[in-house]
Image (tube, rainbow, N blue to C red; front, side, top):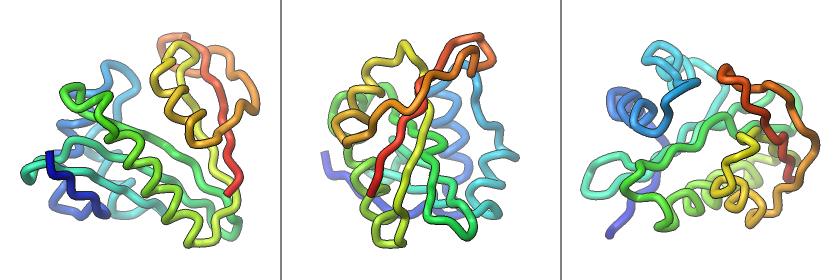
Length: 148
């Protein structure tokens, strides 16, 4: 499986919307929100493709005037999970952020999502705090932090 990783571009929007809808049942971004994150927000959007098809993405919000970033979303197509795609996206994102001078990265993850938590812990994220009823469905989240 030959993977290609790169920054997303405007033409990727339809595939990003499809990936979002495949990966999440709740708390999904709609087309307008993804378009904003891709084209207008102070953000980085990184995609992984196989055979020209986007199979993973990470959206990172950059904070103006401070060296802090937030991993806003990490998506991997269900057919490609547990194959290193999430790790590749995280490694690429963290490398780019470090090169930009980012000192701290944060994210939230559902308390019951052990697979995602294991990925983040493997990248040296640590628990900062618990967030009660964080998601629309009432699930709690864990707020994680990594110093670069």
